[in-house]
Image (cartoon, rainbow, N blue to C red):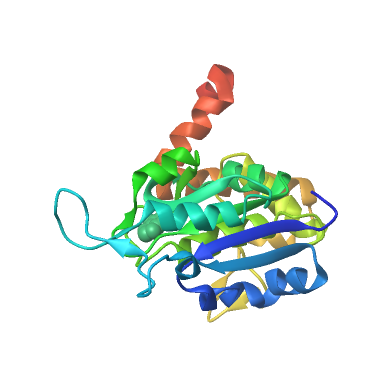
Length: 241
Ligand code: ADE
């Protein structure tokens, strides 16, 4: 990370949506501390006509409007000195996952292009060699909430944002398993006992229990993750399951 902190640059028609929820909690605190910085640019500022037009009808017909390539290119040019990959948020993109968040956090920043309406002219996405990223298989009204989501996933990984205890939990997700279920006091709540082993003080046994719990929950909740976990384990361990 550069000395100036991790630099987020956001191109959007709704700059007022930033930092939004990232102004609160750990992300907000680390933003104030300068661990990361946020610069937003209003795409409309780059419209060239007197009506400040940013979009036009889709070529070939169809519903909705498309952000114009000349307007988006001018906005991208304006931030050409900003560090990091150019990311276009779109449901057509590569799904966001922990490795991508980690990769971004290890760099100096990222530039986010948030689309509205039906999307952005593909030529400008291709010409700028943008990384297209999706936050899931559903359609949002624009890329802003997706950019906020990517930023939240990245910022919490920056050095100094969260404490040691938290980063250990992070590592356990890196194994490809979901977290084990959590419990706190009281041990008996409404007649329901928390698992006895957790009150035993036996750290080794607790760690083993948590690993088994993580495996069981991953198997039942996310068979897709479970299959990937088994593949990563190699044939020896696979036979033990
Ligand atoms: N823009 C609209 N929907 C999106 C999604 N699911 N992911 C990223 N960007 C989007």
